[in-house]
View (cartoon, rainbow, N blue to C red):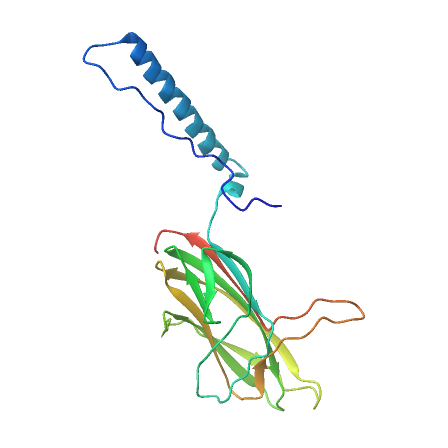
Length: 217
């Protein structure tokens, strides 16, 4: 099983003897040896982390989420929160209230989504998708995705809306994906696993959140 935790052991501070009132060669040598061992361990750790494959020892926040249900809009004048029902990976980033992606550490995060849209109308349609932080829309975060008219009465058109976005989040902040279609004939659709050939199910939504940096822009 993969070890998801820190793979390098943090060296304990050396247990150094207390200095006396006068110079003691034995005491000085003992102190020197303790510090030498400690700094050698620190140097080895830094050399490993800063090496060509040192990134494998870093433990950064991340999360991956998806939904296996259809999501619809009752009207075109309401903003709807996109929901998730499955957590694939969670390390410092958690799902709550079905739509909130919560972070436990402040920093810059890269948020990516993939949304499976379906259009059952005879006309071209649009769907807006944007980000909301702590219940407030993030300025200039909207994207508009176009959907072709359905191909026939029983054959709707489909498109994948995908995007990645950097956002500055404080500890305990949460993000939501919001959407609004130009017609209620547009929905977010899941599809079961297929046959001939065998192929996986299609989630209605996939989202990932990755920690980028603890330094604000």
